[in-house]
Image (cartoon, rainbow, N blue to C red):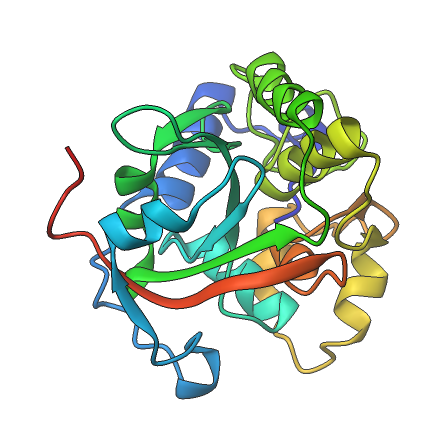
Length: 244
């Protein structure tokens, strides 16, 4: 998380080189088995297939995964949980559900199979608002995802920037459609205060030596633990039998 974009102008690096470097660090694919997660981070021993999880989903459900790119693993460590990416179900009427997400380089919709396939060891969690959505709220969620599609990804994780990142994307879509605030808005200082043992070396490099402590953000972990949401599934999903 947390890149100070002003540092690009202060740095002597070529901006194109810097952008390429960040993209490579963020999204260079790692083998799913390359990182062995401690047992305490595993969701549960629950397991299911991609077609079974698809049958349980409703528009507005949040779906959490763990991607293997280095900064996102650092996000999970900093927030003390296994998950580091979240999307929202926006359509269940086609051949398979569609997931709205903010990802690099810009926000988009992704099929459930492709979304889940990016998660280390198939780890997935699904949560749902405690109150059923009305037809109007469902339409507003779908509209909110569509309106935010194509917005560039915010590698600074700034809640007040003109860009998007995954947990902000989902938070805003849900709040605008339902009026319900999920998760917890907090500054980097507040977030990391609960994790005093975290090594900040990576983030100091990521922010060119200046972590923006007072910047407000919202994390996948805070959404996962939101009291406004009920857990639907928490375990491993097998994507070998793709939906058709």
